[in-house]
Image 1 (cartoon, rainbow over the protein chains, first blue to last red):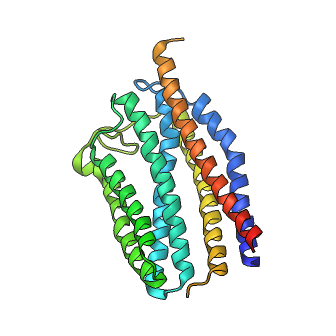
Image 2 (cartoon, each protein chain N blue to C red; image 1 turned 90 degrees about the vertical axis):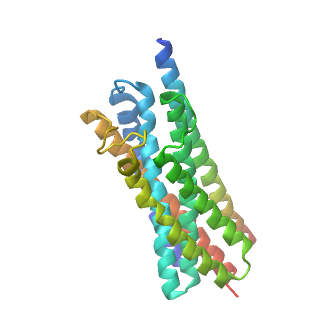
Image 3 (spheres, rainbow over the protein chains, first blue to last red; image 1 turned 90 degrees about the horizontal axis):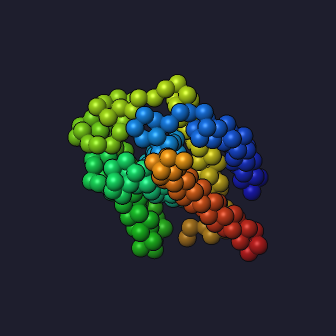
Length: 225
Length: 41
């Protein structure tokens, strides 16, 4: 229990740090950064959409990492940590899709289009919904952990596809760093983008640690038979 | 105010409200689970 207490303190420090950063990030992204030339103020959705994407990959990445180590070590704690990553990943994956849809409705006039990056992100969301359904359908804890670990590792292979989709298939999704749809950003916009990313990422890590500790506590109370 | 700007701000408000509402509900759910465990032990 003492080790959990340390974990909760770490999560608390992360949460506090993010709460200190959020006012600065909001000021940068909602006030200081200028409206974009064609998108206007709707461009500011990007300052929350992008951190949601990075947190999606962080959650699923943690899930895949713990799943991989689980297949090697076979300890139930690693399975619990993988589930925490998958759950937090689905949360942020849902938010990245939702904020993207709101942006798309303004920019493209439609809530959804089968652009390669959007489709790959939707497939990723679907695979991890499948991960949770698979876990719910298996009763044997060892079989459940093994099968879901394999699925998590395979599903995470979609993440590089999401990154490369803009370059390979040339969809209409804007690209931040390079490519034909590159967003032209002024220094104040880059500052808003990075501070918002940092604040949300630290906040997301606090949530991930919190959820992991809850899972570990649950495991202690209900040990795997 | 320019109707185009109003429209942009409306979409922006939807996105921010949605993100923070979902995060708040999820944190409340986790907190509920935390105290439920403590109360049940």
